[in-house]
Structures are given as structure tokens and as C-alpha cells.
Amino acid sequence: MQTLLVTGGAGFIGSNFVHYALENTDCRLVNLDKLTYAGSLSSLAGALQSPRHIFVRGAIQDRALVSRLLAQYQVDGVVHLAAESHVDRSIEGPGEFIATNIVGTFDLLESVRGYWHGLPPDRQAAFRFLHVSTDEVYGSLGPDGYFSETSRYAPNSPYAASKAAADFLVRAYFRTYGLPALITNCSNNYGPYQFPEKLIPLMLCNALAGKPLTVYGDGGNIRDWLYVRDHCSALFAVLTRGRPGETYNVGGNTERTNLQIVRCICDLLDELRPRHTGGSFHRLITFVKDRPGHDWRYAVDAAKLCRETGWAPRESFASGMNKTVWWYLEHQEWCEAVRAGSNRGEQAGV
Ligand code: NAD
Image (tube, rainbow, N blue to C red; front, side):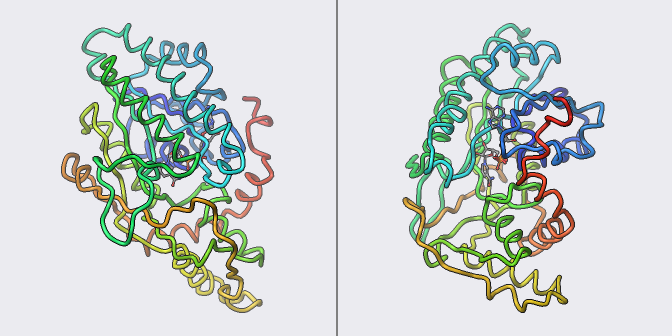
């Protein structure tokens, strides 16, 4: 794999993927990102100077631009991460989720299909289109069992439904046109560069600001958590060793209730900031009315990925959370910049 087009590479997972790829591979990356509120050039600090990283501000819906980038850089594969990704926002306004996650994925697939069709047979066979998706497409689990790659799709939020639709489009492009596409469905990620609207960075930022730590319902909803760098290594495992046409679940085998997550953050902050004067951070925990359609439990079985590619996560939940909390403590200016929307490219002229 020499040149990858990465979509959404200024977002949370995308920026981690760019850093990971520059550090661990010799790939060249063409990073296409629209720089919505969720994307920031400050997440690419250090990577922007690399000769192996070309950042382009633009939308996946712009077929002329995507076609030009594919041809100009002779792209060998696509890692598609660009999306609207926040469930609460999808409940308030689903339109952008349909436009980006469904129509945007369709536009991207059309551009890629045209380019791929014109490649010589050996490059066609080696080409990969990796669509990065979520375990939320499977809906909610009861107390037992895990989602497998053959679990029925039953999305419950507009976000999950839009990702499910995109998954089906990618599947159809493999079946219908032979585009060598693969899909990953991953559980909740955590780590550096996550926009402070998602559970872990939001709670961290609010705790440091002395604001209430609001938990939906009784905090009993369960998610499986994976350190973002382990997700990035899984994406490379699937790109290089996965079978086109297949779906791979990615997970950390680390189930926690939302309340356990918030308590873990408070414990770590109490330990790491012992001179904080306001007392234990636990006093800030507050329960609020549950989110509509709130899935109760997600848990994925990643056995197929481990068996076929040899992938395994490196971080334990304890070590991953420790790194994450340290990172946010040391990068509070990053949180302020992305919240203020002050590093979305205008100043950098892209
Ligand atoms: P994110 O919201 O942090 O980043 C999304 C990025 O996409 C942003 O940089 C944004 O500017 C960009 N973008 C949005 N619309 C675009 C468009 N039309 N054209 C080009 N760029 C556009 O999201 P994330 O958490 O990094 O998630 C990345 C992908 O991984 C998503 O597809 C998401 O569904 C999936 N995923 C996320 C998680 C998770 O826990 N965060 C888990 C499983 C799967």
C-alpha cells in the first residue's frame, strides 16, 4: 500500500490514523477533510509538515475534486472516515447525517468506482476501499451475547441508520461492481483529539471547569471501549490482511456502564490533581433525563478480525484511560481551540 486517500482525517479517529500511519508505515496520505466543527488542523500538529501527508480541505461530495485527487496522487486505497458522528446531534437534526453519511458515501463510491475502473488489472486487484463504520448499526443488546458480523442490522438512532445505509451501499459496490471494499464495525473509541461533546472528553473538560458531569438516565447503559490507536492498528490489519467483500467487527472486550466511565474519570482526576481545592470530582456527577431511543448495551465479538489478521489491542482499559486523562490535562488549549472553532483552516489558508 503506497498512497492512501483518507477522508475525515482531521477528525478524532482520522487524525489518530494519520499520526499512526506516519509513525508506523511508509504510506503517503492524501487527507481530504471538510473541516466541519468536528475537524481541526490542530489535531494534525506535526503531521502537516510531513512530506508524506497532503492535507486538502474539501468535501467527499465534491466528485470533481475527489476524482482529481485519486488520479493526481495515483491512490492505491481509500480509508473512509468522514462522517457526522454524534448521536445527540443526529436526534436534533438528522438532515446533515443523511447528506454526509449516506449521500456523501455514495458520491465517494462513485468517484472511486470511476477511477478504479480505469486502473490496470494488477492495480485494480490490489486496490482497497475501507469503510469505517460503527457497532451501533446492530441496535441494542440485552444483558447477554455479542454482536457478530452476521448479526441483523437494527439501527435505532438517525446516526446509526445513516451508517447502516452507507454500509449497505459499500456492500453493494463490492457485489455489483467488484470494487474491493471492506467494512469495519467498531465499538466506542476513546483517546486524544476527540471533540469534547463525546462522553469521555466532555466529562474531562467539564470536570476541570468545575461543571456538572451529567449522566443520562441511571448511567447503566453499557458500551464496549477501545483505545483509538488500537482501532487504527485494526484498520491497517484489515487493509493489508482482510478479505475484500468482508465485514470485520472491532472491539476492545471492555464493557463499562456510562456511570463506571464517569467514576473512573473522577478517580483518575482525584489522583492526578491532588491539589485541586474543590474536593473530589465525584461530587459533580448529576443524573439527567435519558436520551430518546438510547440503546442499552453494545458489545462486539472481534474474534474474526483477530483470527484472520492476527490483530490484538495493545492497551488495557486502565492504561488507555490513564493516557487519555493525561493527554487532556496537558492539552487543555486544544479543547479550547476546537470548541471555539478557531483552528478549522481559515487561518492556515486551506
Ligand atoms: P469525527 O466527528 O471526530 O470526525 C469526522 C471528520 O469528518 C471531521 O474531521 C469532519 O470535518 C469530517 N467531515 C465531515 N463531513 C465531511 C465531508 N462531507 N467531507 C469531508 N470531510 C467531512 O468522527 P470520528 O469519531 O473520528 O469517527 C470517524 C468515523 O468512524 C465515522 O465514520 C464514525 O461513524 C466511525 N466510528 C466512530 C467511532 C467512535 O467511537 N468515535 C466508533 C466506531 C466508528
